[in-house]
Image (cartoon, rainbow, N blue to C red):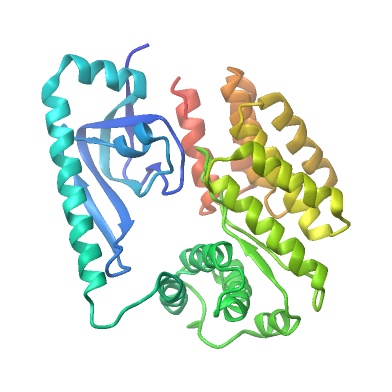
Length: 362
């Protein structure tokens, strides 16, 4: 195998934050930027990639989720390396190692400086409060997708936190607005919408962010526990714990935890969600046939599942990993046909389809 040359058009996405992949990229021509959230300000930052510069290296070598989104600003030519290909190249060219060490060193110094600034700030902000405020910032600025991600991560890390009740209602509100208006549209979000107020009045609600520990980068999910149900709260806690295991890449333990929730039912919301997460765990464990069977059962049982496109995408990815690219491409085209074009899942699937048809693994 050798690195592959891939052409990307302006406004396309090479990879999303939260994706998991072993691909490393080298910009040959064009313009690409990396978009991420500054830990000190909470604001979005975009760093331009220089021609001849590698990107996506740390997450690929470290086998963890992408920390930024790679956006193509102008039509670009990119060389795509697998980790073994990159390591082979680096072993033959010590200048590459020296250059990457310099880049990593600069990044570490910048992060260290930002952390120091946060620690000596006059107004100390604990992580729980900081995460909540990030969600509020995005909600008020009508960036509902980012708000949902922040709030759902809050509930994963702080299920009984001081803001948990407020976060629950804000999740409902953000989901209502993003479904009605899309990101950037609708009224300024602040007070609870009617739907959010009704949901929060019921007490226990649970929401989880898709940890996207795979190349999928799928969208986040929200789950509401039955109003006034103590059992629902216990199930929510179990679900959070299982999701946390996924985020730690402990897929076997996570699978068992989700199965325990499934076996302890009946709770329609958590049953459907647990089945979905179990099928994802099988994918991460490279049990592709079992993952296909799991997602197929979900699609048949819940034809209107809110994450139907994600389920089909995992099936397609499983076929792709098995080398059955014709089946994978057919599924990708089916998902794209389900629309809409601005759906994050559809955008992700288009990228995967281009990679499959171009002979490059997504």
